[in-house]
Image (cartoon, rainbow, N blue to C red; front, side, top):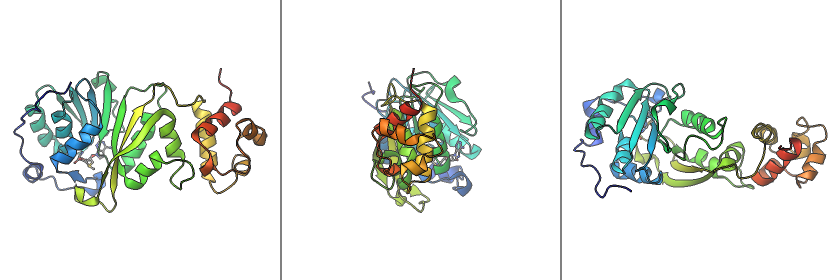
Length: 285
Ligand code: SAM
């Protein structure tokens, strides 16, 4: 249960924090900050009930979303930030929420956060887009399923967000949609115009919320599904009998078993049908 009243943190407004600590945005680190605490609280609310959860936040920057997560009642936040200039601002937040915020200065792509977290765990982040996509793919492809996290609440470029939630028959439908929707429920939770950020990026953004399914939506061997989907979408304009020729010599037989016409193109094939094809290629024990 969320406490009735959020902590009265007495922290200064984020514009002041940025001025005090001279946090001029660095392009190389993809720094587009969210300074509106109503907005960061709204994003934090999309992450679900945080009161019983540890939250992993990647790229807290000056701490707008961090403050949202804590004011929305997160049990604990572990924040990994690459830019050491942000640490004093984050220490101020840690002082306002004693024992609830741990900050690690480092690269999220190189740090294993698990030794610092206690389940249940949710992940929330407003990250540079390239790092965000790489982490999303990692979080969706662990050795074991279910994964260590319950949900992911992540900011993406609008176009990437659309690729994550895309349905068959749309241009955005591809590997990312299949990867995400095979093992998670995915939805766009909040849309944001460039002006929501300081400085504003060139494109619109969206927060995607993914909830881990207890097991994959349809049975399939992960490596086989990934191989088939990669081959199919690498040549997305070709018919599957051509694009999947290299996957198996008798691919037309496997397509028939899966109920997919050999003349179909990848864009039209449902996740369920791709999983049936993967099972025909590699039956599950
Ligand atoms: N969360 C803050 C907000 O919403 O205002 C900052 C968002 S800004 C888009 C991205 C943040 O991620 C920056 O603070 C940047 O320094 C940090 N960052 C970039 N690459 C990172 C990485 N590999 N590991 C950890 N943090 C990273």
